Length: 187
Image (cartoon, rainbow, N blue to C red; front, side, top):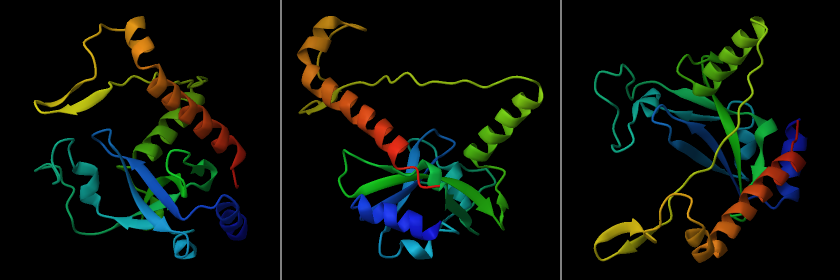
């Protein structure tokens, strides 16, 4: 498997692999590994501080009283089935990481929690089916600060027309990411 992963990364021209996770503030975070050092991280991943799961949206420090501090290390272990080349960042790929502590899933790992809940639902005869609705704002820097690119109302076709070019680029990147994730499965 190690050689298959490294060969896939080489074939795709990947220089950096971002091992990413979603923290408890719903921020996607990551640590990038250069392809030349990747063999050192294939199996055991990269280290992160437990405190990184207690960092809120607007502060680069753990929430006081969270019980998650800077002492110790959690391993962010790549799930190589999720390896995806990033068309908007040539030479970069991303892979989701599972948080592991002493060889076992860390109880504060969102992916592990999700896997447990899916298994629990299945044990009750339920199937979890989910989808995402991509919503976002187009913003621009101005002398007054960062503001919306226009003053249109929700779902305005005028805004769609005015910003068609950037919306098309975003949509094409999302489609490309999906198609690459399907093609680059290495496990």
